[in-house]
Amino acid sequence: MALRLIAKGAEADLWLDPDWNGRRAVIKRRVEKRYRHREIDRELRRLRTLREAEIIHRAKRAGVPTPVIYQVDPEEATMVMEHIEGRRLRDVVAELSPEERLRIFRMAGLQAGRLHRAGIIHGDLTTSNMILTPNRLVFVDFGLAELSTEEEKRGVDLHLMRRMLQSTHFQYAGELLKAFLEGYREEMGEEADGVFRRMEEIARRGRYVER
Amino acid sequence: MAEPLICLGIESTADNLGVGVATSEGEILANVVSVHVPETGGIHPREAARHHSAVMGEVIAEALEKANIIAGDIDVIAFSQGPGMGPCLRTGATAARAIAHRLGVPLVGVNHCVAHIEIGRLTTGAEDPLTLYVSGGNTIVSGFEGGRYRVFGETLDIAVGNMLDVFAREASLPYPGGPAVEELARGGRRLIRLPYVVKGMDLSFSGLLTAAIRELKSRRWSLEDLCHSLQEHAFAMLGEITERALAHTEKGELLLTGGVAANMRLRSIIRSIAEEHGAEPHYVPKQYATDNGAMISWTGLLAYRSGSTTPLEESYINPKWRLDEVEIPWR
Image: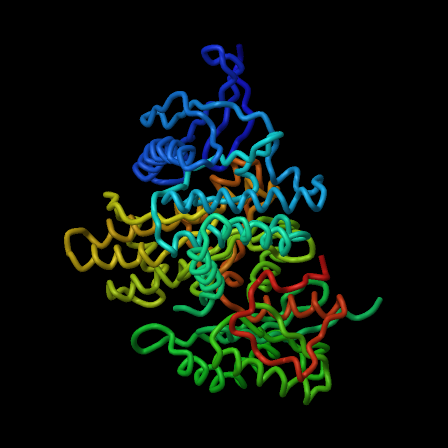
């Protein structure tokens, strides 16, 4: 059966294979970027493919729903994984009831906390990278993820989420961030407070006048 | 038909003092810039401010002469209120207040980053672009959504232009650093691996700068190869976040603005990304790429025409004024 292009991201193309060895699978292929130097391009695609597969596995072990990985090919910068039946959180935010919205963002925060606790930095925490299914919130796209327990990196992770809320879900940014951070703190406990302080500090850093 | 309104704008966020004259029909009548070149090191805010106040009178006179108007023709005075270096901003703001008061015309405080985007839209004809704004003080990917220029990505530490300038200075290259690095990079062949730091749609240049300076001091590489590698890494990072934001916002136009927009390698990257995503690439013309007064006068007019002025008591400068804090009623 024919492959169908389901998403053309900035970094990778996602193909749906309805019958990959009898399964519905997503094939993620990091495409060549002609605008960047060949060596940089090759190295980035190879490393990110490998690292993504590795970290998805670790996230699952930490109790964060992620797709099952079927196959990894670093040289071709290709990964085959389970197809998640659901919708991107980004697209459903406006349709959810206010209570449901808060519940889900709390859950998102809780799962982000689980990642951090397991030493994983997602690197691209956005509502486009969370898929809502009837009973789970699945984190996808660990393409920019890394292993670290540094407070600075955790802070950046949360900062990115906040920035995403402010740019894309600006109507509800305040309440959604609050719910997200509450969930995060529930998982991380007191350690969360340091990360929150770091997040504020990152937002305050002079990005205009430092020369 | 009513006469077009005329606005004189003063730009003084950093090392450039710019005075521009624009009309409400989008005509730029004058755009005079005086650059403060530090004797050693980077920009010293107080030294730059001293330069600005020393040349303020003559730069304004020259702008009026170029525009072929007299002070009495001015309907609005605009100034860059932030973000930028405090002492520099204060110099421009003080002059703007004095002139507005003397002429009895309204004062409009303009956000410097908004002005870079608006002059880009005016001079390239782009209507609703995703904008990559790159300069010595700023590195921002932004697009208009819900009444404001939202920031989709930005640097977490230093600006790309700052990074190039500091590297150039360490390598004893002539001022300004960006063009010197670009020139040398053309002769580079080998790629030296340097840190590549992208976090979501944000990026960081401080690690890249540190590593590049370390490689420079190791004397293992030719300066051409180092400049080439520095540009390739920095611009690949800019390309990546721009592409991510373009895919995310699905805008049909891509605008490159700010001082680093003059770099031809960066332009070719922007063109390639735009092509890939079916967007139209636009590059702000060179005289409006670096900090200039024309962009302030034009943006001041946009604000004034939508009913926004800055009362004297609210005209204090704001060195940390973020782009996404500004309401944009004219769009």
